[in-house]
Amino acid sequence: MKNTSHLLDLIRRSLAGPLVDEEDFNLKRVSQGVYRVVREYEIRANPAAIVNQDDELADRVWQAALDFLAACGVYCQDTRRVILYSREEIEARLREAPSQVWLGEGTDACLEVARKVEDARVPLNMGSPIGSPVAEELFVPLMQSYIQEPGVDVTCAASLMTVFGQEVRTGSPLEVLAAWHEADLMRLALHKAGRPGMAWTGLTMSMSDVGQLSAAGPAGLRPGDMHTFGLISELKTNFAILNKLAHAIRLGGIIDPYANPIYGGLGGGVEGQAVLIAAAMIALSAFFMAAMVGSSPTHPFNFNDTGPEVMRAASLAFQALARNSHLMTNLTVTPVGGPGTRTLLYECLAFTVMSTVSGISRILGPRSATGSIPGHFSGLEARFNGEVLQAAAGMERGQAEQIVQRALSKYADQLDKKPYGMPFQEVYDLDTVQPKAGWLALVEDVKKEAIGWGLPLA
Image (cartoon, rainbow, N blue to C red; front, side, top):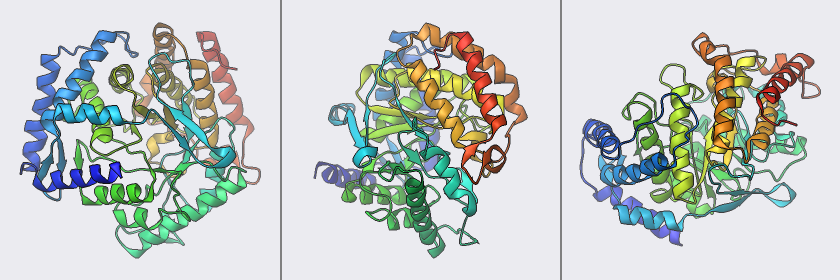
């Protein structure tokens, strides 16, 4: 009942908050607000490092994010009003946030827990293409390639490009059919992989609230699964998002939303991006009653998060969260590289090591080839990512920085070239749903290289 009362309060504030033009919210509240706190709290990231080494700086980012969020609020596009909570109210909500949650059912259930910086506990591995587009005929074997991996704990569905051969239209009956078709195919993939109780999230192809609400229930996305929605950049919501939240609360679902601030946008550079990421994660918990919160901060041109500037901001933001709260946080690996490329593996190495030592509770992906090239992803990169998680847990940040820099040097000049790699059917045998020899050999070769850098891979 507590979440229901919080929901009613959120709705009331979305209807009664200050009336503001959206452009004024963007410029005066977000952009100028971020600039103010970056200056006042003296947020200056080390431009030579990717993994933050400065605890006092992380703590100032936390304070700046709280200050900024209390002044800025979250904008509701349907009412043109700002949802505001005081700093004291935000801090009280954060104290109520869970620090652990069981995901899934039966022997496939797993426990997600809040972690600290350099924590020896291993983050959960959500092996998945994270809503990337896929053809109907490839959906089941592709998702099975992730679910069958022993090192994958939970998953997220790919997005169907069509439903029974027809292109999905937002808000139409086809969206409802597509959501149910995705849920049916996910259940089939879970059973084929022998893990029917594994928690999953999905219905991300449902751009409106119609599809997600229709297929969220015991026969579709179950209460023990993760129910997701995303904030609109930056710090915006609407009634469709609030409808998804209301339905998940009444269903008793696990609320697992995300916000993906855009680098170089309203938050500016690394320092402003770090504050904006931290503030968005706090808002998801305090305003939207999230059980866990996540992000894939986005590069405006390459649409990845594995570049040095975005990783630098993410490390600082998530260390701020890990040091000053018990929030369960997650980051999505969104590399430019695709299956069959070294670039993908180096990007995963750098991002996953950075994320693990910065205190996340779960890694998502990899969303290979930026998640935009249909079918360019496979379960093998999730296996690789899980092994990196195991190796990086408990590592000191100084050692992590050295490994991240070595990996970054291998791919930094490749990002603009967009090495999207090969589609799933060219790196996996569709009959056995196993990776082909060439893709396996490439992964093993990069692992040997990383071991030489000091990453203790098995």
